Length: 393
Image 1 (tube, helix red, strand yellow):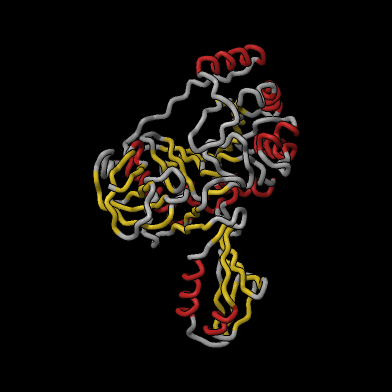
Image 2 (cartoon, one colour; image 1 turned 45 degrees about the horizontal axis):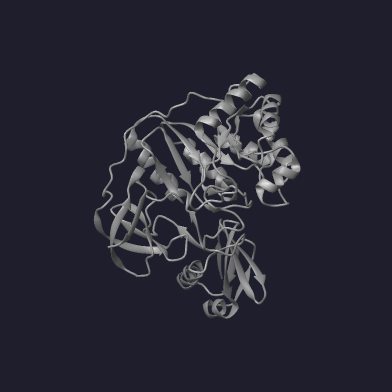
């Protein structure tokens, strides 16, 4: 008898197959006949029992095949699991991994996907996204690569868990915070979240793990407006406000609404007063149009935006214009630059149709209009902040 137990896998019989849930959000299915070829079996929630011994290798091959069909249960997208043996670097993409803009502020992106569908989302995430592929990163791989980067910088850093989507969808979010908190020179850990998935129990776990700050994307307090902005009738602004009040008693809370002309201008005074009531800080952001984002309005010119903030400051006796500048630190060297032609190994599909991810010299490159396989020659079209885009040369 062989019992194979797993921390991140759950097994469930469904429609004549075995559905394997991975990290709660993702899944693939195994055929009953394929499992029986390994041996007679019986499933538990987090384990599978085979009558025969010495079947680990055969079952692992079956799991490996299953992961090729990994899907996101929210949107049905194909999902790529990026782990330490995947060959996919964690530096080079804005969608996943680590983004270092040469300052003390490091962005960590463990997952893509969102349970909301915000009508102004700058990266076009959510239930109506045009993206066809999602990514989820192995926690230990992410922490290991972050530790190397922090040691290279050799200076204090703030960590922002800020994925393209909702970080609380990441099943290992508490463990991720806990492991990041153990890295020397990490001073502050923040999460950027809509708050829709927060519970008091989860907040307590995150605070205990080492979370220092929550940047809460609360864009309206009036329920009708809040639902419209969130793009879903399931959004419960009352719950988010309750969670905000609970957070502010535990750790630092920033309420970070986006001011969208014609949609929520009248909500800004209400949000300012709400932040005061719960002893939270507020940082109003200007809506900016993005090529691949959702753009329900035209962007307000920055000079006009700052005039609006000054008027709100005066009317509500609140500080809204922060004189904050990141501290510049040692920057990672770029292995190639815009205009260079390089050889790169294609690794997996990109997020959009006809897009692929390639790897070279410890960086990942997003390659546009790429249909080939294997080694390709790419012309680098972007190298800013060690984020790389390319095209077939």
